Image 1 (cartoon, rainbow, N blue to C red):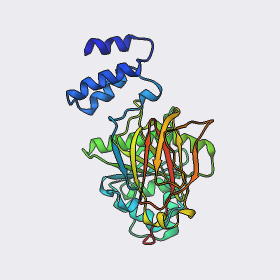
Image 2 (image 1 turned 45 degrees about the vertical axis):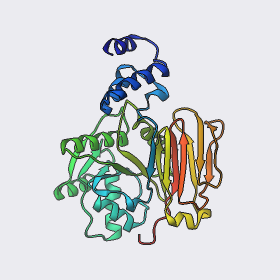
Image 3 (image 1 turned 135 degrees about the vertical axis):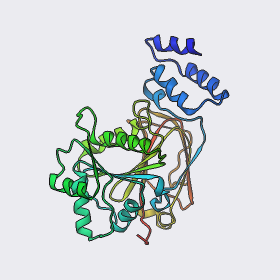
Length: 314
């Protein structure tokens, strides 16, 4: 095993899919921990789609109604974006999550949200991260006086979003806490470069360069976006979306490379073993067909985005 991996490491070309699958099959039979999978990808210097760290194919269930998440195992991150979600939903997510983080100018935006909605029970941020070039010093000082911890991340080689995710990982490890989900409040509308940068970080979060086992959701004004790794997925559609599918959109797009085969059920326009690629077929302005579950089987990572259809209770 050691000699095989040493040869791959010395090889100037990336290993073939067959070689990687053979190694993976061997360690799987030994019931080797998942960490070995990540280690193999690193020492074999994988690139491109093969760098995506993923388990053997299995069915993954998703429950996009945010109120259904186990918030005690969730972190909430506020980027430098206006908070335009229903205030009661934001309060629910923020107060019930295990970890609360504001990122640079997002600290100002969170402070404004608190003042505008006159909530007197909102918890202060646990962490304030970023290079802090756009955070109001007076606002930061106020939160620090309440108990917030400042973690400066001055490096300009990565975005504040990427650096914030790394700090969430460090903090949870330091506190021996395993979290399931990270909800990131983002702006999907104003700046295309920021929008694409956020998608890039989302994609990188499942590669060997920035691996996160946690589910990362991008929460926009009225949308939820996340990554579907290669495999089979069951998305449980909230009832509010099933009742009025004409008012709610769905989109899914290949990420990192073409998706050679994609099959879906539960949508108005389904696919059957279809090739999806930029410059070719993608699925936008799709919607639900009224069924309670959407299934997707995809050979490569897809970006999934959908309207939220907030429950009336929020």
